[in-house]
Length: 441
Image (cartoon, rainbow, N blue to C red; front, side, top):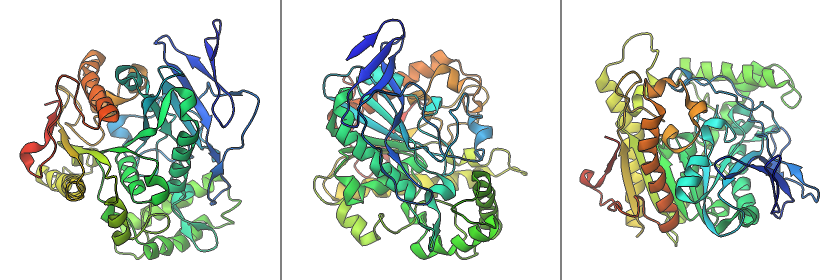
């Protein structure tokens, strides 16, 4: 390691080639713009070319082109986000030091496979790295049609999953140069990121790269489209695009994506008009193969959970009030019951599962303990979450007080295979509601 005291620059030497990062005032080392791959439009990703000269990784890598999030009224708009570009296969890495063998925590962001990015400031891993003495890696992957269109002769689909697998392979090959242990990787994500993490467990190429998983508010895998449904959506998208999909400007891709989403919303029974997300096809296997792979030894350690009012995030701004019993029912069927089923599968396979419910809600303002409310407690900075509606009028000191315990719990799981803190561990889930860990209530 070499450090320039004037610019606080730090040079790391991974197998992929030397990269320059920055040492912050918190003494953490950040490399927010490391390229892990490249990809032509609608093609599988390939590893980034090795290089011998230092590459500047001090600026956040671009995120995939995207439209505004439908949950922007809940979380607020992205603040100081990096630029958008199809050339988006970058990751952000934060580490306490370049030596040692710390657990590695790889974050897969949510956003319905349509929005978000691992290099956004809301996903900065500094607080988690500091409180848990872990290496945090946040991954960008292709979104929307660019990542999940399935159309004959154009795109095979599931490209965003291939991106995530390639990022995990980069971690395996390079993380030792950042003080991380490639044999101790915890994959964690929220919403679409949590579903991705669970999907990756059933893909042999990815399964061998992950030791532990934390799935925060994962919708049921059974809700993903079949291969036929995914490919049937392709013609709708192509018609909406009205041009050569391989050369169409990015805005044309996004406009066609929006039209396809509108068709899906207006006609949910229309065959094939599914949202752009992973489909039950290569590399994601069928249910029988998934179950066989999931049960193969060693069984992964798993933390899985949900918030107390998941569905509340999806009714903010609804044209008419939505009854609370409807919100509760949606929360249970979409998030709670699937979490219990996945945990039960781990138990049946002889593994350890820990189930939680995150119930913190702001005293004033906000929308209750809705989908995604725990993310500011784990990741991001005071500046990136300033004014976020989901936190209401809560001051940052309160977020930090609750967040430190949560971050230590997640890091303890990465270190030892059980969540909690050194002073207070969690009981394993036994299949009963009474063993669900209540957090923040």
